[in-house]
Length: 425
View 1 (cartoon, rainbow, N blue to C red):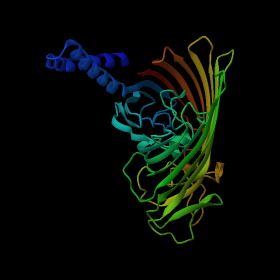
View 2 (cartoon, rainbow, N blue to C red):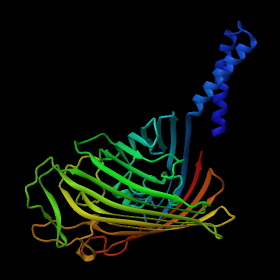
View 3 (cartoon, rainbow, N blue to C red):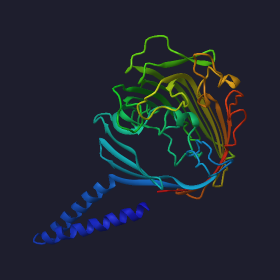
View 4 (cartoon, one colour):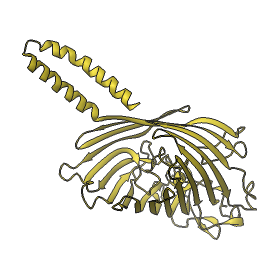
């Protein structure tokens, strides 16, 4: 696909240069040829700065029951337990110069057209170790957020990632410090910036959220072992649209006794740590990858998911935690990979089991939004080549149960099997 694009562009450039050659025919043949070659070289240099890439993921999914709520690509329709779709249809344009990069990426599926990324990176002209990124781009938190869906060994990111950082991206500015690849300090990367806090949407309030990350990535001399570790921090706030804010106390939500001013901000704060390890052995390439996040999440009464627009109702403060662990094993001499992933999301660490749904006079009961979920994923990947990949993956979802919560006295039938074909160019 890339070769076809380049051939077309070169042909167009040659056609465009022909008139110039004709106009300069009055000079010597050598001068005319040199001028034409210079123009062609300039045009090719310009073309090489421009890059088009993307991928398409088409898939079939089968759920245990119709109409389930799911983090495996979104909820199923009310009467449907089987569906086909284009999960992602990405088209990415990048233009590079010595000191700047412009990126625009779009998602085109049967659901419509959406902008995913649009940002500018400007690098310092001296050591080129410092860069400024501005626009809509991935939040610099953890590992899984920035890890491309075209490379990830599972269909979707972890439940806590989707809940705390829906859409992965945000609108803002970020500074990045990383020495060039030729430097012995290239392994260290420091990022930090201020963001709108509500994803790739127009800003809704004056509050800016800070996100920062320090990470280390190393490779042994023989390149058979790679490892990395990172720490991340999120410090922001959620707009208080009412004078009512609720905190947890003995298994129920209790209204904050302190005076709450409309227009203030409830604390949104996460701490995270992530680690990766890859080794090439006689069996093949083995990868271990994990992440843990904990913090404070102001959210709605029935949902722990971060707001994408300014809230209009009361806020409920929750202590949250989440984690995931990947084990990926490639089979040496083949095109096969096997993956096991475990992820956990507890949206309210101060309540569990039959406490959830309990009521008390004058208090607010917890809801299904306070249930803990664990997901075990088992998958197989066949990479025909660098472009074509087939994935089969089964999500085994387990929810916390409570006899005091209608519909959640037992585990829901919401497992999902995904069969996906991907083409990348």
